[in-house]
Image 1 (cartoon, rainbow, N blue to C red):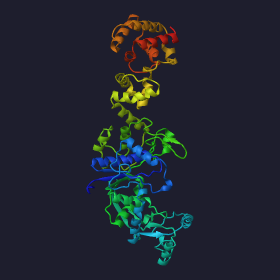
Image 2 (image 1 turned 90 degrees about the vertical axis):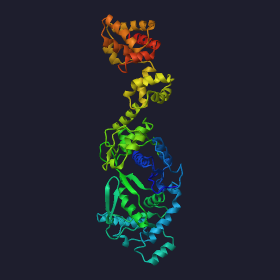
Image 3 (image 1 turned 135 degrees about the vertical axis):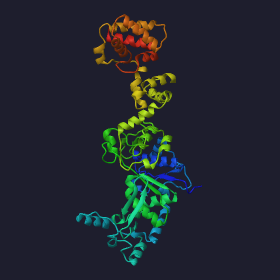
Image 4 (image 1 turned 120 degrees about the horizontal axis):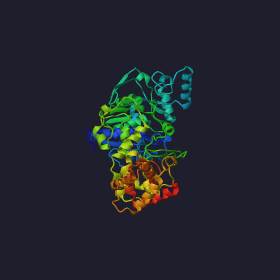
Length: 511
């Protein structure tokens, strides 16, 4: 059963498209707070606006959160004591709460047609004003406050379409409340309009459904994005109107564009080449494909680490956190009010750091499928782990390991022309040919240090330039002037493969 003292938070996305990374951050901060407080983390799908519903969006949201590692205690899949957890499955419960507000004088019926509202907007625009349905003009509109009771009764009897609007106080009232991030927040009711709570189609608006569901699900803390801050006074007034205990609010800072101005959008990602969605998304209408962090090769723990630092910091120099460490370190007093600038290079850096923290064996197991895709049978795990360990410092993603290590699996088909022109000359090519014969008959220990000692001795004996020989030997074995320690490469490739590559280079480039 529910403990009255238990922290209960919810992440409540709308299935109107793919989940933005900002939405995942909101879910993350809810998750971290719930786990830190030994509380309950809930997923609620807010799908009351069926006109904006996008097929596949709910499944996408659930899969994205699952991939991120944010596990819910209650939700559409898990169920729970306070379900159902889709608002469309709860629509029969909201009407009575709207009626309750009408009866208590906190809301009223409004019969204005869309044409009448459009005319009011145009009239206001003609005067250089913005139309707002509020305490100043509602008595001049078609509603139960302005019309005679007999007219209202007649309209209701004829089943004329109507909405239910919240009645803002007639006097200018100061609405104050505490926000865990922003401190005291205040609004004046004279600046607020009479928001629609219940629509003509029989469905609640976000405002009513959100407050009713949070109350019925016993939500103790509402943690959401800054864009919902303007809704806070209405929600506070709704709690007062219902005479309910209200939750504690926390409005998270915006995630800003890399340039620092404006909210981060999909367009920014498309323009600058980084994902803004956790998973790849294919638009069901247009077929347009948007990149995802998962498909781009990010580790979920790196993704969460990066998101956590968009608006929060631990107050120390530590930047790399595993999810359980984030839970331990998280607190709202370390969350900033100001917007957090997204840096795509920093996102890559987080993934690089998490990659380096994995064992070579873990990376080898992740790299194996990449090799299979390339048509290569992966070598034994211990050998692959050693290869990975040599090149991992140079990559940010597992798939980049191929670019840094392909020469371990495939002999070069061509040779860097610039290196050939600069290095493949003089006595060195003939010495490479001698090395081919030496390797072929070599019966010593095939180990990097021993091979280096043997070849260094021969280079000194023939009075050749050590750097020049090493450049040409590397060119013959990997195809260019790249890669980790050359003698380690030679050791791992083995005698037969090295001999074959030297022979091919000599035959291709000449002596």
